Image 1: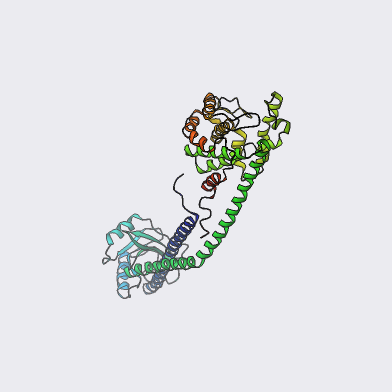
Image 2 (image 1 turned 135 degrees about the horizontal axis):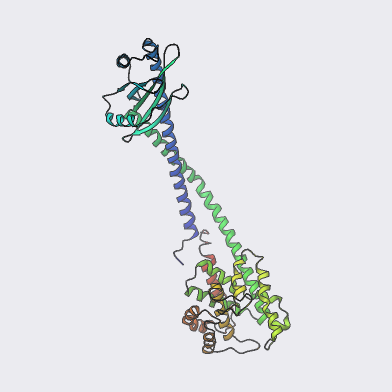
Amino acid sequence: MGQKHSLHTFVHRTLIIRLVALGIGLSLVMGAGVLLMERDRVSREAIAVAVDRLALFSGRNEALLADPDQLDADALHQAVLDFSATRTPIQSGAFAFIGIYDLKGAKVIDFYNETHDRLSAVKEAQQASPLLIPDRGAPRYEIVRIAGRPYLKSALPLSNSSGQNVGIINGFFAFSPETIKAFRMRGLRAMIGAMLIVLITTAVIYPVVLKLTKRITRFSVRLLEANLDTLETLGSAIAQRDSDTNAHNYRVTIYAARLGEELNLPAQTMRTLIKGAFLHDVGKIGVPDEVLLKPGRLDDDEYEIMKTHVDHGCDIIERSTWLNDALEVIRSHHEKMTGKGYPMGLEGDGIPITARVFAIADVFDALTSRRPYKTAWTFDEAMEILEEGRGTHFDPHLLDTFSHIAKPLYDQYGGKEKIFREELDEILKTYFHEGMDSLDY
């Protein structure tokens, strides 16, 4: 059945994992958001400084920019050098490249900052990238990474004193190491802040969630117990009407469960098998007494009436969502491997595994139990009858498995009219209650 964990452990672990995951995710999102916002803020500041300085440059070099068709490259280059020498550095970084282009996109001059430590990478990136065009006369910029470092690639319109656009300026602005460190630190602080918020929130809501989970668990346990009581009541009611005792239901459920365990059936399949075993003959409540309680052999007409108990059982149980999976056993436990069973004539693996398991348990208990119309058969006689049905009535593989556990089961339960409530409760606890009450501590 695999490793099991109590619900208490599950809730603690799941809640902590999800809160930690939330904290990490939230901190990463917030950190990345702050990083992007800070980088955008610094970029806009750099652009604003560049725009101001470009306006000042245009005013000081009005003669050079008067005619867009007569831009003097040498004069502009010298003007840029002279202007740069009189300006204080931008605190957030410096331009590693500035290029001036005419309105057709042809290069007029380019200027590289020879002191930049990654100039060769900037040159390679600048030469490989297309010209960035201002957005309807407004500055345009984007963040690019060159040699693992962020750069601000910008485009500004170059205008003369009359406001006429005469060219385009493209630049690669290198953020200073201090600036990069600053917005990374702001992002890190945002991440730490988000983690602290999650931790504080967890400390506040965790006890509340755990308390609510305990209450839900208690309600779930009570609901489960009510469902199991309904299961036992329904099964016992028809068993007593049929044979004056409901010991048959306990024995046959134990037999089926032990065979299912020997087959390593999944837990959900085991639950289906157990519910179906206890309710397999619930439809007999719709069979007339003269047929159901007849002490002798049924004639053909009576047998056809008896077979209707399968449909009656399905009609009763299919109304219950919790018991609905038991229909596998109720509907198919009279099917045979050769397809000669009823009501649908299923054959082989077309019969649900739960019904094939139960068919062996049901027949074995019927043979080894005393009924008003027969005495109990011995263990060897019962096993001989089962062997006669190998491959025709019963699944050979399941019959082989049952033969290994049948004698101990017979010795402990066979034909005894005792109500094996403790044994059944242990089975129910294993497959229905496991971990359900572990929050009540």
